[in-house]
Image (tube, rainbow, N blue to C red):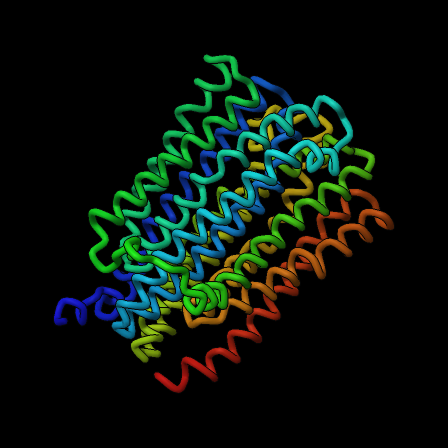
Length: 450
């Protein structure tokens, strides 16, 4: 019992705790986003601009899988963290085992969808037969082999929930490095083309899954899977999705946003060129966003544990420090996008037309990056306290309710370049909502336990 009382979530100084929890997440997500950048560069070099556009369209479907896996994982993470804070280890083990079951079920759903609907999905966004063919071949492999990403996400979240983010980082790095190494081999050396990019992706995901589950079995002493005599516990599943479902909706909005933006671009004068640029921008954006997202995700176990232990001062201190770092990193990203837009696009063999409008677009969209960093931190802090709705609503405001209507209207009435200003307006609106929600959560949940 004494060992449990000394869980680092409750006793480490906040800066040291956040460094130990969030830094491994930031590094692993940085490597994962680096994979996306490297993968796109190899596709651009060896397959060409059609390959970049095809994988951009396919990625909107991959985001759906990622949305469900991450959302379910966030729900499991939040429940585990709060249960650990309350010393309810029966709930901890049930949450872990039910989370593993949910990963398998969701993987089966997407495997079937990929086998039957990959071609139809690509055709929704592009009618060019070359792009449809490339996109279908790529997406079908990624979806039929998606079990790895669901198992990997679940295993990594279980490690994160108990503060073992270094082990989670190791598992993620194993998958990402495998992917990066295999990309040129599969695409170019073995001459598998677009299929090679997809195969490298799923192999990397299965490596990450094997590593994360093995590390849980060997090193995670606070969680034990209850496989023998297991029965689904719908009360536990409901608790997982109380937090996880809003996160799934939030992540899914990202996918829908991308789909709708691709449709807006399809109808513009730039067509596939605009879609290809957006894919490049999105990969570069994730290189900045993912580490900040990892930083903010560290708030879930830290806030969850200390909220469960009724230590409001540590909850608030953790949020404030994380928010300051996130905003600073995003501000640096704004500077980089403004100064190095052309060289970054050049890595993907961007055409002159893409450079002409793309550099301006990157400068416009990057203006509110710091707003996004603060909004992300607020959402994950609220999720750690059992309220995933804040992230969901902020995402809906940013990516659907404001962005899509304004992007369409600005582009239609003020020209294609004006489309990108919708991003800055939407990000500002999301931050205003998030700040109001944070004030309410502080008064209701944090202030009473300070």
